[in-house]
Image (cartoon, rainbow, N blue to C red):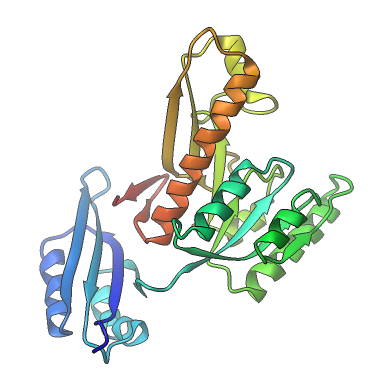
Length: 288
């Protein structure tokens, strides 16, 4: 006997009485059995957030459930998503010349610890084409020979073709050292994650860990956030830190920082892939 299909429903809407009753009542009508449920009310913005994982009868599909839920969602003015929990998020990785996050993500996927698919890798350098080949992942090298707006626009069009040809759900900037155009950021709104060294907006620019060393910091960290046209200022998904002291060299800080970046980025991707992250203006709600 086949197991009942499982689904994930996440939503946000203006806060009002009766939302939980309406949603759980809908699931009961559809023969649903709730497995996990989490909710949050933002009193400052009068907005309600919810994530429910549930199972339903074998005849139900994500498409049929979405069609049935649509009238309720419209009535309550919801931003919502309903997906089958077994469906894996399709992720495009962008990388430049620092490969620690790329290598970490590939290993997590290979070992089954990160529930995503990686149909392609894009880079403005050739450094990691052999690493991609070892994982049987197509590698696209789109060089940037200069920083002209025309060439950057042409390169972004190529990346957009890869996204659309591979039905990409999420783009991850795994230490991709290029600034995306406002138009491309808008195209990727809510479906692109970047990893940034340090707590935003500290230590921007070149040699961030050397900047931290010069300031004598006692904590170094990393921030994973959604990409927006405001550089490194998108809604934050996850942050992590490591305590340090005066005895460590800048090179040791770099090594520690790279480990922190890998862990922080992997968590953010996993939570996004598991539909645990909801946008709340410039912030996020994360049902961990």
